[in-house]
Image 1 (cartoon, rainbow, N blue to C red):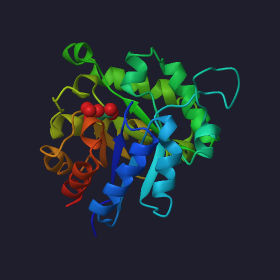
Image 2: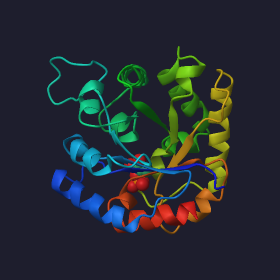
Image 3: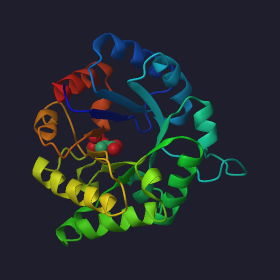
Length: 251
Ligand code: PEP
């Protein structure tokens, strides 16, 4: 039996509702479901409902939000909440993506409130952590990752913690064409697992790698058993090549 793998597509600010419907039509034609293999999609909020409808009869295809506000409702113009995205069909949400942290100024305290809001809304949180290039070059990678984990997950116990997927996404690798080596990623994944294990996550935690994953490097990356899957931006936008990438990674 193959090992469980999760392939997550972050569409960022691309693909409106019509494009999302067309995307799923092509993806479903090209992708043959694989045992123990889940494909998650994070469309922009306006395309959540279209994507969720297009995936609704398939348990292995999961649709989630790219971000949520920590409040369930209220005067927060432009924001979407956990209950709102759940109503649109989302089953998961990214939290603390590096673009939220570094473009929109999201703090560790914000990520903590968002993880809590996601769990309260019944959404599976995918918490993104990772260091900048300067932090890496300064030998700060593990300190940054530990700080981000503690900032977002402090106070959560084993059962709740076990519901969280961690995506290790070094900031210097996102959208740059420069991916971490499988060995470098594995070293950080081991530290993340040890951090979770010390807090009572008994079962093997899900840790994904993200940052310039593409058709050329997916096989080499997933040959590393520390990686439970990948979070992919640019290389997930074309449905045919995304299906090919998932097949290559799951082979
Ligand atoms: C991402 O957006 O999470 C990401 C990893 O992007 P890319 O694959 O384009 O580097």
